Length: 275
Image 1 (cartoon, one colour):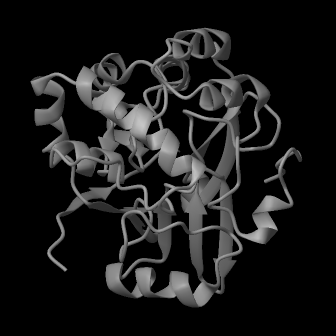
Image 2 (image 1 turned 180 degrees about the horizontal axis):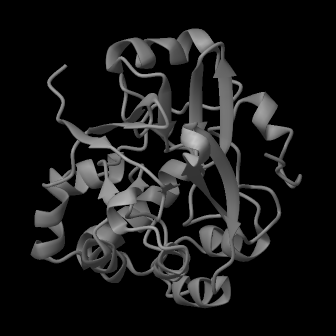
C-alpha cells in the first residue's frame, strides 16, 4: 500500500491521545486546557483523526486545532473532504440511519470549511509511528488495512494482528469506532482512546481521552473522562441543518442507534465504562 507514514521519533514524559473531535469546539477547547494545565506540549498530543464530524463548528474547530498544532493522522472524514468527495466515507450501511444522518452533517461541514482548512488537511499523514517507554507504537484511524474499518474490543485478534505485522509495532493506537478500550495479547496492545466529540454510548455527557506516561522508563497508559460545556454544543447543533438525534446524544450520552456495534458492545449501552 502506498501510505504516508510520519515517524516522529522518541517521545518522553506524558503523551495525550484523543480522536473524533467531530467539529465539537467546546470539547476541543476543554482538552487544550487540560494539556496546558498539565504541561503537555502540542507535539506530545496525538489525534487519531476525524477532527471534523457531527457538530456545528467545523471551521472554528479545525482552525483551533491547526493553531494548537498537535500531531494528527487523517481520518476518513478528512480524507473525503480533502478529495472533495460527496460522502463521509464512514462505511455506513447504505440506507441506514447513520448513512441518512451523514447526508445532513457531511454537506454542512463541507460547506463551512475554508480553503485554508482544506489545505491543512493535505498535510496530514495516513499513519504516525513513534517510540515511547521502550515500545514501538503506530497510530491508525480504523485500521492499517482500512481507514473506515470498525475495530472494537470484541473484534477477534486475528483481525487486529495484521496491523502489528504491517506496521512492525508493539502498540497500535486507533480511533474511528467511538468507544474507548484496550485489548492486550501477549506483548501486543491495541488501544483506542475514545473520542472527545461525542459521548461513548454510556449515558454520560463526559467524553474520553487517554494519557501515556513513561514514569520509571516504562510504558503506562491511563484513560480519562473530559467534562466540557456540552449544553453549548447541544444548543449550537439545533440549527435546523444537523441531525436532531446527534444533538440529543450530546445531552443524553446515548447513541441514537447501534447499527455499527457488535452484539457485545450493544449490550453495554447506558452502562458505566470502567477502564
